Image (cartoon, rainbow over the protein chains, first blue to last red):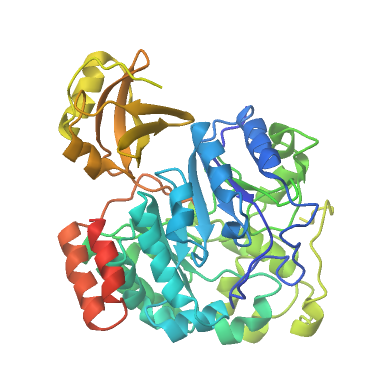
Amino acid sequence: MTPHKYVVVEVTEACPHACVHCYNYWRENRASLYSPDTLSRNEIVGLVRKIRKDAPLKAVALSGGEPLLRPDIAGICSDLTSDGLDVAVITSGVRLTPARAEQFPPGTTFEITLFGADAALHDRIVGRTGVFPRVLNAFACAREHDCSVVASIVLNRWNADYTRDALELGIALGADAFLLNRMNFSRLTLPEAARLAPTVDQLKRALDAADAVALEYEAAISVSIPIPPCVVDPGSYPHLHFGWCPRGGPEAYYTVSHNGYLRPCNHSSRVLGDLREKTFEELVNSRTASAFWAPVPAMCRACVHPLRDKCRGGCPAASDECYGTRRRPDPLVNIINSDVGNALETSDGRHRPKRDQSRQWKPRESEPLRG
Amino acid sequence: MATKTTKRRTAPEDMESLAAELGVPVKEGRVTSARDRYFLTIGKTKKEIRVGEIIDLPQIKSLAGRRVAVIVRGGNIVAIGRATWRPPIIVCYVPAPDFTKRIRPELQAVILDAHVRSGVISPSLAKRLRLQR
């Protein structure tokens, strides 16, 4: 048995949006909604049941892409709920209507992205117009059908200074809790760091605002993408919950791709193997998985911060995606603590090609791991 | 499917103590209505609720379409009450299921009104949101 309680299933790679901070490695090479590779409802439920034979699963997050593009998504939720699992649907919300919300089992959690309290700002980040009112409607739809709602705010340079507005709007909409994640980096978003990454001062202001909201409204706000303490010290924000990479431990959220491949987490493009062919336990206990979680960047070993053992260099998947190694700290450290030019360097010291060439990059499968 | 009932206990505050008394768990289900008949769905099982036996008509009407707390014993519905709030799970990215707490309704009402006044939330949407509190 493995100790894992959570798993993420990417039910589709398709998505109607073009969020500026999207890190999904397939972002520019998506499988369509009806791709033959995409798992069917029965296959998804079957794979989750297969994982449960090896792990005491409590909850499944259905992600994408946009999971609500699938007409059978409510059925998948019902099947998993009937199996005694908690289910969260990670969605932009735009496809959630009263009729569709009715199809979901009561108690389903919807994590709905909310990037600001201003329609133009939200739609600019999403990359589509007319989205904002539909997002607000999604909150009402979920609440009307006794589903829980988590407002998911992703901080970037454009919206970080409006954090309080977004949180207060979420409260008005009846959100039960908040995710306040700074944008994370991948090969696709790293070249955009100069334009999109929040500055240290912005991050501090955003966390100050969130801490005040958490205190004032007794709101549950989770800063879940790790912010290394060398960038901003979480100790200054006592009313926020800070998350750290579980690094393969019981809280890890191994991720099932749309085609049944298992990955270490939803940020990583590394494939541990095909879950349809091997057991969850085999893949999670494989040398590939162990090697993925093991490295701690050399510069972090000398860290004396009390949170050192939780941080361990921030998000290893982001380092792996951006630099091809987990022996470097989270790209945020480089982006924020030095100039953006350094962040754009590859691990061999050469400057990374600009966006046009990075678009040609394809997900890696079963590559030997460096480091 | 007809439903036998054994007790008339519907007050939500009784649910936990009644469940403990009977040695059964409080389950979650959903009440639906069709042609003046009311049904309870728990997982994949759907049963008709005999109105007047375990719950009165005004009470069941108020629960229709909602998630409810249910006590079932020996295949019989013993009690139905309004489900208590359950913290949502947060899985993306680091699970934080145990720290959530609900915003107080009176605080939400104040801030909802402020957003209606500023035009961010339409009055019709606000009306729907108020009904959920």
